[in-house]
Amino acid sequence: MITSSSPCCLSSLLSDFSKSLGLGVVLISFFFLSACGPRVIPKELRNKVDRGLSFDAVYADPTLHRGKMMLVGGEIIAIHNKKDVTEIEVLQKPLGGDHHPLSVDQSAGRFVYTYPGFLDPSIYKGGRRITVIGQVTGVQSKTVGEAEVVYLVLTGEHLTLWPASQLYRESWTGVGFGFDATYSR
Image 1 (cartoon, rainbow, N blue to C red):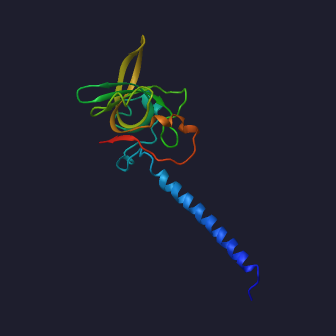
Image 2: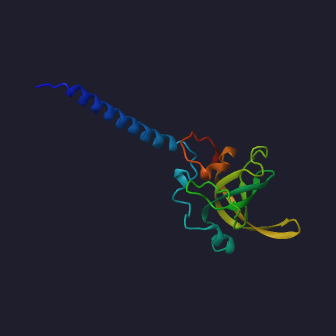
Image 3: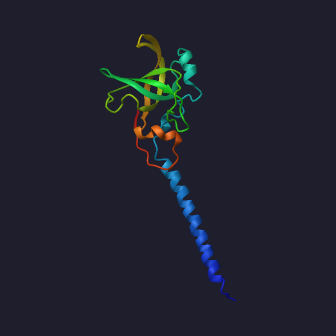
């Protein structure tokens, strides 16, 4: 027997279903769009990067870690194009969960990232944030003002230049389309 409340129940069921479907579409879209961000650690380097290495430990004893592959990031200080390579001087910064250098007044030191080729200094300029994967090759002394500063030296394997608009990223939550500049050997 059909009562007058049946159409109301059917409409309520359809409404609940469409809400559930809408929520499912939003969740699935979120996961697909989150995959559009930069690949900080490419698949071919995942097993080569020693994720247990901290910048502090390597900086304290680079000869012990020579030849190891590490992930580190920070803020570009300067860029120097040489004949066959580009050297990027970087102020190390702690990395967030997405491997983006955090916007904090904290650093464990400086490093030089040697990139095998030309990088345009108009793009890779002071203040931009990068995350790199590099092989520890040693240290280098440079003069900063009147002080001698020791820089850790890494040979380039992969780098991610973060969009300038992501300087606020640590406090931002949302979905977006990720475009970045990356290099892999």
